[in-house]
Length: 486
Image 1 (spheres, rainbow, N blue to C red):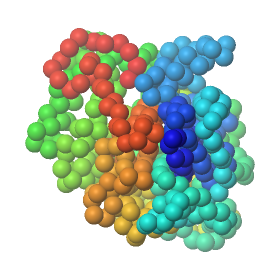
Image 2: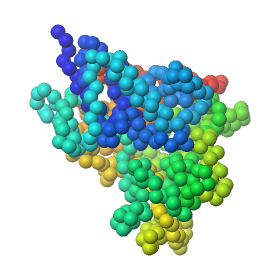
Image 3: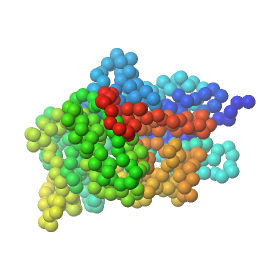
Image 4: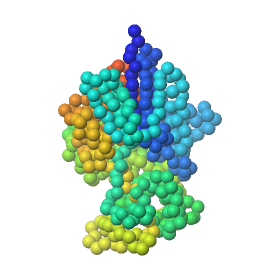
């Protein structure tokens, strides 16, 4: 007697959702019939915001040899390139649009090889997930904005980061006129900006760097002034692969100071051996979730307040070619970054009057620009910024925010924890929704491993897969250098 059909709905069709489908299809067995409903708001499947750009100057910020998207095969992307007759150096940083082609190819191949499993693609916005207790044939109903209903036995949430919204109050007049760009990744959002003379960007992270390269390359375009509370821009990758070393990070006290001291001590050690801080930051990546979980909630909150931005600019770095171009724009006076807080915006004719405050200052700086672009990043407060889908799950007791409100609370397998603290057997999350629990949760490395583990749990009827940490990366005593991809 054959097993009943398993129906899995994946909410979100970007890289995370596509990889969840890929791993489900790869785990597929003939004795376990499978139907996957992959639902994407934009209908672009496999790209999402991260890899949806066609701009050739928008490069991956991870070397090719580290970008494999198949669980257990971190070099797969590099091998895929060679198989297509497009060999690249291990340390090469390729275009993000190229990576979207890779993800789509993985999905198409997995679908073709698991011919008896069904993959259905849906273009729509999921508004609700309802659990029908005792109802047949499916315990979950996924509702789309257009009225479509999809029945599922299990649902994987892969919706990407929370929408951060506007970082300050923005007058409606500025929104209506287009003088304020809320989402620079929306189709056509930057078309008119290329004719501007002066533009202010809110945020100084990697999104700001993308905007600078898009608007200012080739000597045309506006002058950009980017501001944030810290004024810190991402650091650059070096041109060679980092060397990984395992080193001991104390976790017994649940406090930040011993961990920070261990990291700085390791930076001093590797610097004496000819390497630098990048080797230490990359060596931490596999163990960062365990370090994060070892901190108590107050210490995690303190990290967010005091060290979050410092960590981000060192952890999420610019590809060397991107850094060269960005620094050239800075040197030419086309782009500048500043530590300032935006107090308010107001219309001033066809332009925008911006009031800024420097750290520690009482007086305000007043500037006028042609346009303001929001690059302030993802939302960080699920309790305040939850989309209707997540708000509904929380209201129904099927999910709860993590202790910091960065995302949803999950167990080690990615199952959502309900209001009662019990893990769900039907609802799972991968990607950024797990950041509050694991911190290191948004990169392809983490998404591929999360996808593999969740897929195995679903298809293999609850059997979980241990994701082994390479011996050279377990946080124990110092050992000689191991040169490989992080």
